Image 1 (cartoon, one colour):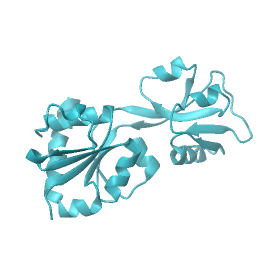
Image 2: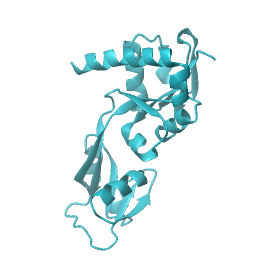
Image 3: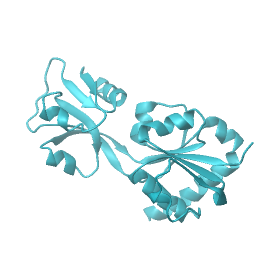
Length: 212
């Protein structure tokens, strides 16, 4: 069995923050690592391979075993419900999921529409609230939906709230806090347990130090 460790990472802010943690944990990653346009980056010195993917695809790669380890936001984990182990909260890219809408929004009695790129999560949330809604799945620019009359409310990630404010929306309800997690393929966890546990332990020390 190859001792190459394959790690799936989402592009963007999470990738940059996760790379910083890995460096602090003692992993020797090239200086140009973050600027590479490659989708697969080999780091032979560490016997590691990195796959750069869309955030929603990371759990899929890990579940199917093409990646041993992944870094995924808790929002993606809740939405995708993949068969993977969640082993460490990295405490990076902190934000939260919220319901938002136009100021003065009043709940409708009949079939209100909610736009989100998290249809499963949104459906479950409103079911728990005892509210029956129609979910409209969008892949981007969720804030547009109330502005053009497509939906009454949205469910989306909120970081600073600036995007909502700039588009004339207000936060109506907070759903759940979100951070990025280390996830592991169950088979890899058995076959490459020593390498995976070493990485988790090294990153755990860094995460604890960052919180002090």
